Length: 228
Ligand code: G3D
Ligand code: MG
Image 1 (cartoon, rainbow, N blue to C red):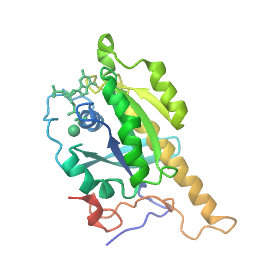
Image 2: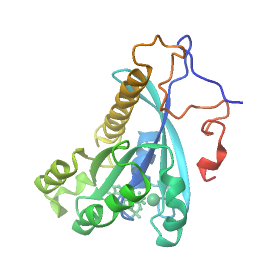
Image 3: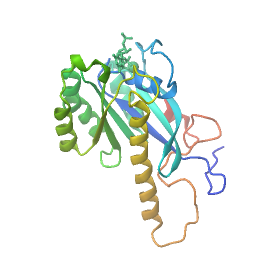
Image 4: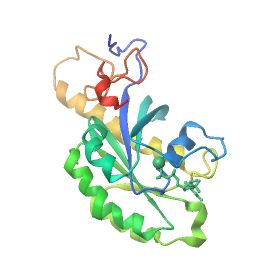
């Protein structure tokens, strides 16, 4: 049974975040770095089949929130069927490219932004651009200025990261915190707007959050959204 957050002893709100970008740019590694900050990157990152997600508590200026981070393989065979489920209820997206691979950057405008617009309400989903593999600067193919121009065009912020670097050194936790802070601020603003001048009758989690149920990983009691 679903439990609702209340102002006293409230559970942190849960927001669904999705990873998007070409294969091999480091999406799975970024999630692994966030959830295992000090672990060497020697886990099996080669076969993200279908959809999987991880949850992580993150600090924002407005308090703690929980991110449910979805990661998928980009195989076309899977992607077509799974994309609606993947984007359903998503509040934020991390668009990832590899700074040493220009094609992975071009794919963002040629492919991934289209997928995003087709399957998610682009205005409602917060976006962050992440240029990964910043430790390989000597092999860089995507100048930072090119990525910044993309950000100006699409109205989003960016960070360069390295999933190879442990802790905060690779900018990975910072990236997830930046996106989740934007998501949380938007949710709080939307909640305040929807209440208008009326006194709150349901304080706690903002109205447009995905609530965390008793059973970890279920969303509003609806396991169908999990794809698991
Ligand atoms: P994906 O989930 O987007 O497909 P992966 O990408 O996370 O599976 O990563 C693809 C490869 O890039 C992996 O190499 C991984 O170790 C490497 N990688 C990921 N992030 C970084 C990074 O920031 N810097 C460097 N140098 N490599 C990174 P392998 O060889 O293990 O397949
Ligand atoms: Mg992967």
